[in-house]
Amino acid sequence: MDREKFFLAFDFGTESLRGAVFNEEGIIVYTDSESYKTYFPKPGWAEQNPDEWWESFTKLSKKIIKYSGISPSSIPAISIDTTCCTVLALDRNFNPLRNAIIWMDVRSFKQAEKIANVDSQSLKYNGYGSVSAEWMPCKALWLKENEPEIYKKSKYICGFQDWVNYKLTEKYVGSINNTTVRWYYNKREGGWPEDFYREIGLSDVIDKFPQDILELGKPIGTITPEVAALTGFSKNTIVVQGGADAYIGMIGLGAIKPGRLAFITGSSHLMLGHTDKGMYQKGIFGAFPDCVMPGLYVVEGAQISSGSVLKWFKDQFVSSKYEKKAEDMGIGIYDYLNELAKEIKPGSEGLILLNYWQGNRNPLIDSQARGVIWGLSLKHTPIHIYRSIMEGVAFGTEHIMRYFKKAGFTPKEVYACGGATKSRLWMQIQSDVIGVPIYLTNEPNAPLLGGAILASYGSGYYNSIEDGVKKMVKVKEKIMPDIEKHEEYEYYVEKYIETYPRLKDLMHDMVMHESK
Image: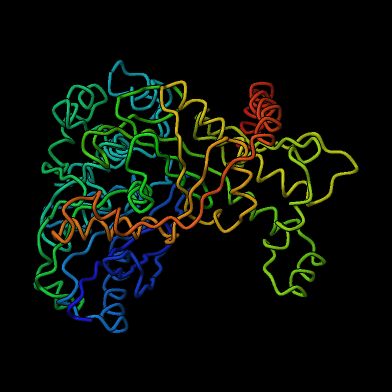
């Protein structure tokens, strides 16, 4: 095995760290994981301890070297992806001054409202609409206004990605991916928008940010001797630049050409597409220049609650009789529910479901939106509702697609990964609703594969990201839309879209009432 080359990728997710060793054909030869905790000090707050990330990394690295059977010398490079935007405040020795404020933390909603009201061209990346409290300037401004001693003491303010890469190499660099999609960095327009940061009261934060911003796959440096001794890696191992988990997933799906859309499914659904021109549309994020592939832009849309709604329904309302049937048949409960849902015609016999359980990110950008189901009759069964959840999520996908098209981006192919791809029925519904083919790849964990591709490129094994994708990403199935069902679904999509404006005020009134 020593004569072969292997590429190691780490995926720092919300709940755990996953690591995988891939061969040059994109096949996993070993994978494992370690978990870490999330802390919720107050409602809307979410934090993690960076030292726990590092402890998980060293534990996992040792396991990989011990159990994979692969010599460290045959791993020329590693790459990591992380959650985004997760923010750290560090002292001059790169030690965290407080827990990291992770991506889902929305304590900075007041700062987000303030930023949204400034007159700046930088806000084009928000479609000139609402600003998400998840983004870097909002969190940095919250630190400055609410923890001024921490902010003043901090020598560096950076992202998850930057700190881990520093721990590996002792090089303080930024990723063009994270900085462009969440920090308003624009390489084509001179880098940091100094006027914007001055306008929002953060003129001093740019000096705390990384100044050396690297493209994806570019070598940062070799791991330090201390890290080599701690993990078992070769001291010659190169660390190459990665980025935000879902965006690295675009590479792992092969969605790196204009007209291709990456569909990252799970508890939430994320839609990321490449385009060859800048486009800015209220309701979607981007277009972000050069953030994955140099010379191209990425547009972004997301649904906060998707697979999580299906799981909520299964956990709360699926009776033991269904579970017993599934057990008797020797299949999982979701597989059994899918078999039953296949028999129900499109539209779930008149049910419309808005999957806004935790609000709506795109295209409405409304944190006070809430879930709705209407059209119920005594004929409807739990299976009707189960299918209506699948359809409601698909209608939300189509809603975002329409905003993409308004901006000038019309995807011709969708490449999907994640939990929802385990359901052939759900993928068929998605394809039927949007009227576009969906491709499934061999490797379901696209962020990990994307990281391995970056490592193969950064080490010089492949000459480009495109070459790595050609060799390591393999399509296993193409799901074609049923045109008749697509036309039938158009009626229900319209009803889905019409529901929110009719109920918006009621939703907001209820949220405010319950928050008293």
